[in-house]
Image (cartoon, rainbow, N blue to C red):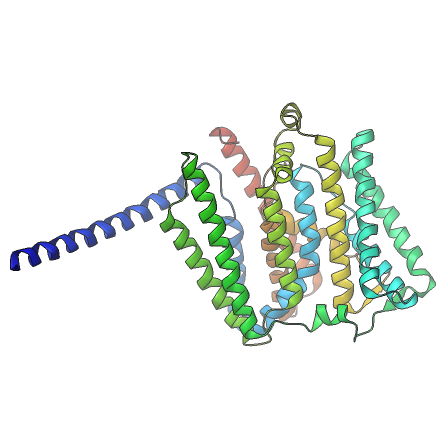
Length: 418
């Protein structure tokens, strides 16, 4: 009996040692795969995350209040409107095109919301639908001009920038500025609404659970098709890491006011758009057209429909961003959508990882990019530096992002991965 017990103990030790070895080997294999992707030019979100960590570190050293829960809460709320506009920019960049009029479209949507809701006394829901419909119509016109006459998107949207801005001024009329009542739910949504602490933790757990389930479902389908699939251990590691990070971030934001509902709405838009781009035929068509229009056409993809849908979606998201901005400020004016709105939205998409050359990027590019830009803005504001410094620093970060993208693209082409 003693011998049998010793044998079992020995076997248990061997199994434990084997598991430890496999775990170490798995970590080494994962690290080797990551380094291989980096050498091949597939950097993913690594440069953006590294840049964000550097920016936060510098501003925290210069002002210890920067990473306080209050500043980070304000940062998230201020990111939602422009981030939503940047999400539309990501879509057109995936096609290798551009939309220079998103700021004007957002301003027009804000004007339509204010006029219909305040002056014409429409229900706020109907006013929102009207504002979004105007944005969608503008995008459809862009797509029709592009597919029907072959005009460059740069020219179409530059003309749209001027035309839509004029339309915005016409809608506002002589008043020039219209205040939206503070007690309306749309303003409360953008300024005051936050999730209760318990609800925020529930949302995090459910979100990570859905993420893990999607990875598990995909791994099973690939395994059933005899394709290389993600291991259960890797899925558990990624899901667990994401859960810990989100719970920690939620706890920290709850120290002040919690998670703003408007920011949560923006995150939901990003997740839905990411699903559409990665899990639907339409999304695969967008990447295919952005990679090679001729190859996509020969594969049977209705290229014209893809362009039309993307321009319409970009303008629609710009309208939604304009509505959020107007609600955040509780007003719409002649300056809505002007200033640096265009520049920040485009810069956020590019800084977040969307390629100017088309075919590369994700919905999360908008989220990462706008967090970087808003972090720069918040940090410089705390340091009491003027806006010109913010523009210069944002310009430098944008150039660095394009340089990284260009180098990554050349590396992928040289290694045959492009």
